[in-house]
Amino acid sequence: MTKQQQLRFWLGGVVAFLLFLYIFDEILLPFVVGMAVAYFLDPLVDRLEKRGLWRGWSALLVLAPFLLVVVFALVLLAPLLIEQVAAFAHSLPDYISSFRELVTPLVESLRSRLGEEQVASFRSVAGGYAGDILAWVGGLFTKVWGGGLALVNLLSLIFIMPITAFYLLRDWDLIIARIDSWLPRLHAQTIRDQAMEVDRTLSGFVRGAATVCLTLATIYGVGLTLIGLKFGLLIGIAAGLISFVPYVGAAIGLVVGTGLAYYQFPEITPVLLVAGTFLFGQTLESYVLTPRFVGDRVGLHPMWIIFALLAGGALFGFLGIFLAVPVAAVIGVLSRFLLSGYLKSTYYLGAGKKHPVKD
Image (cartoon, rainbow, N blue to C red; front, side):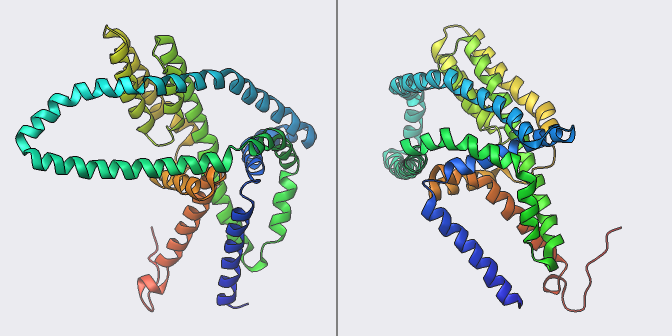
């Protein structure tokens, strides 16, 4: 098979995969989530299996407590979060009005310096951009909601996902061995090396960053709730879950949390406690959690992750969000592999040149 035939073969496989996602995106969510759960829990099952326990029992002993914790958390937190979201939406006009009163003197000062025409032009341009952004975000959420949280899909996620996760956990090693037997023999070792790099990258993000985000969400949510901040649980969990982007979760939580605390409390002490909660979480994340659970294993730039999540949600809804990080990891690893080959090739070095040897 020539290189052109190989290229057409692999491009055809990518097109077939995308077409498969497009056709069956409404029913794939429980299977993808089950695969993600199995991947997350596989190291624990491997440890039990090495101690002599049958893999089926190992999968059951690991998966059952995990599902119980998830169900307990949803039953406990879902009503509180829904209540806080509704209350926040109800109070949002008051917050906007207070913010408008706060910035009105600044706007008047700006108007006196720039003049009416320039202020009107700036307001028109800003309003246009804001409208476009809101329309895009609204369309994205509509796509995610409509594509992933329909009643049938939600029920299939509840009932099918645990079964999928169990069978994948039980047969994980057999599946990997079967896939390995299908690799083209000439390039099998190269593919294995890149697959191991993808696994290293994914494990660093899925297991490491997920642990960091869940820990921070717990710290922020519990801390703000104990302080007595309205919507503290909602703000804390949201800030923790977006902490896979360094400093962004803590920064957004700090601004929103202290702003609401300043609006809610007449004294300064609770405001300082809210700020201290986020500063403590960010310090813990920077010096303890990230070095311990993530380190330098991820290899995915935060902006690339954000783009992948937004692109996946826009293309395939909730399913695309679950697939975004694995696909981003694969693309990142393959891009580095191709770049490494390019830097050693005559396209980069020129004809008759050799790649410089590092001491």
